[in-house]
Length: 333
Ligand code: KG4
Ligand code: ZN
Image 1 (tube, rainbow, N blue to C red):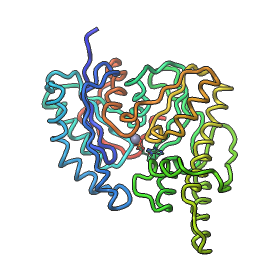
Image 2: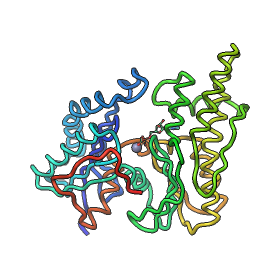
Image 3: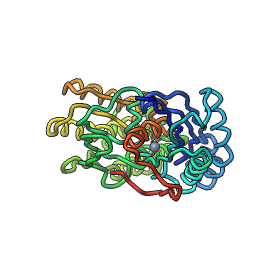
C-alpha cells in the first residue's frame, strides 16, 4: 500500500504544534511551540492569551515543519486537527487553520479528539495490541478504558471528581511551586518520604477520586502554617504522590486480574511521571503483560499524536467537512 503522510495540527491548550506523520507510526518532523513561560507568570493558562499566541505563531510553526521535513503541503495525503476537547478559543485557531489548508490544497480533513491523540501516541513508539487497557491520565481526564479494536472505547473506571493532573497542579500551587505543577511536585517528591497520613480513598469497582486527597494536602498546609510549624514540602509531595499514583496501580491491578487484557498503555500528560512509569513497569512484569508508555516528547500535548490518531480514520475514509466546529467538551469515551 502507498505510504500515507498526514499533516497534523494541535492547539487545544497552550502548545502550538504541527507534525507530519507517516502511516500513523513515524513522526517525520514535529515542532512544539510551548507558551508555558508566558502562562507561568499567571500561575496557569490564560485562555485569551493562549488563543492570541496560537494565532501569532501557527504560520511560523507550519513553515518550520515544511522546511525541516523537506515536504510541501501538496505532498501530504490529509490534514488532521484536534477539534475537542480543550480551550475553545485555542481549538478554534487550529480548526480554522486546518480547514483553510484543506480547502486551499484540496486535501481531506480529519477531525481528531485530543484524548484519542494521547492514546494513539503509543503507536509512535510501538503498536497498540488489542484487547488493551488504557490508563488515561491528564489535566482533565483520569480514565481506565478497554479497547478491543481501533476507536472502540469502553470506560470501566474514572475519577468521580478531579482529574489526577488537576490534583497535581492544585497541590503544586499550595506548595508554592511554579506552573506547570505536575513535574515540580514529582521533583520534590523524589527526595521525600511518605510520612504524612493523607487517607486513602476506597472506591468500588475501577473508579478513583482525587478531591479528598487534594483537600487533605491543603488542610495540612494551612494547619501547619497556622501553628507556625515548619512544613516538610518534600515529604508532603511524596505522601500525596504515593496515594495519587497508588490508587491507579490498585485499579490497574484489579483490571489485570479480572479482565481479558493483552497489553497495557498509559496516555496523557501525567504519563511523563517517573514514579507512575516505574510502578506500572513493576505491575505489568508481575502480570506478564506488555506495557507501552509514549516517549516523553509524545506524553504532553503534541501534534504527532494527532497524526497517529488520524491514521485509522484516514484508512476508514472518515473525513470531516468544512463546517467542522471546535468543541471544548466533546468526549470520545
Ligand atoms: O495531557 P496534558 O499535557 O494536557 C491535558 O490534556 O490535560 O496533561 C497536562 C497535565 C497537567 O496537569 C500536568 O501537571 C500533568 O499533566 N503532568 C504531570 C507530569 N507532567 C505533566 N503530572 C505529574 N507528573 C509529571 N511528571
Ligand atoms: Zn493533553
